Image 1 (spheres, rainbow, N blue to C red):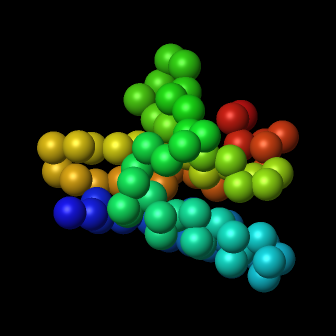
Image 2 (cartoon, rainbow, N blue to C red):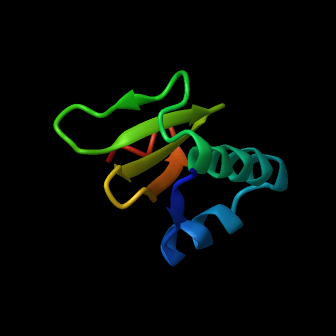
Amino acid sequence: MSYRLIIPRSVNKRMERLPNEVYDRLDGAILTLADNPRPPGCAKLKGRDEWRVRVGDYRIVYGIDDEQRVVEVVHIGHRRDVYR
């Protein structure tokens, strides 16, 4: 049973401004989070209840609610900006 994805409008708008190649890779990575919210290479962020997965130079920061079976994408950005 897969998880439900929640992608806020602000995250969606940020993705739409990215180059098509980057957008496609991020979109694919987000869709795979529905099947496996803790894929190989993901990491729990210290001091936060959030996880991150790397997609090239970009990061997807997201929260997982196992009881509700929901993955909420919190932030997407270049690695130099995403944790600020």
